[in-house]
Each structure stands twice: as structure tokens, then as C-alpha cells.
Length: 130
Image (cartoon, rainbow, N blue to C red; front, side, top):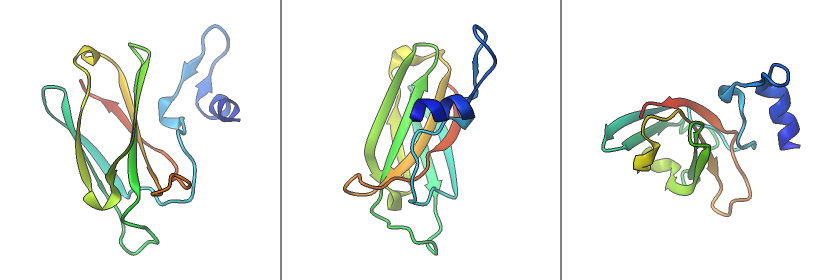
């Protein structure tokens, strides 16, 4: 089912010239609210700071867990960091492997409930500048 959705939403072209629109790739789907905004900034030495905001008026729980997915298209590798921060923390710092430098890296975030039974839709954050 996930592959079928990906083929419909983010893959275009015909064999052998398929193209992937990573901004349309959905990593997770659910009913937990996504952040209102998010931003990734380079710090130094392959370290980054991810910040997000949310509406306290919505039916959001502040103990939901942040998950991020980083896809290195150049190296054909992925990092899936689950439950790395609480929604209420509003930011986190993370590092990429040194050997990922000079690569095309796409990033998504989503939130999960404490027991990992509910999720938000994923939100594409764009290309990370390495």
C-alpha cells in the first residue's frame, strides 16, 4: 500500500526515466497535528538545529515524540531517529555522519504518541545543506 501511494504521489516519468519528487513523499500518516512551522539551521561540524512551533490552542499533547527521517540520495542511505525529543521542547540538535558531506539529503519530521500507536502526517523539511 505504501509503495502504491508513493508511485501515485511522488514518482513521475516512464521507465527508464523515473523522477522522484521527494517533497511529495509521505513517511507517516495519522491524526496527530503537525507543527505550524519548522526550520533547520546548520551549526558547525555537521551539526544542525531543528526548531518547530505549534499551536497551544489545538488538541495537541505536549508529550508527543518527535521523529525525523533523513534520506541521503547520493549515498543511498537513510537515518530514522524516533522519539528523539518531546513536542514541547520546540528544538533539538543533531549531527550527520561526516561521510555524508557533499550529499543530497532530504528531511522529514513527524510526531508519534508516547506508546507509538498514533502518528502525525509527515512534513517535508526540504534539502539539508551539507
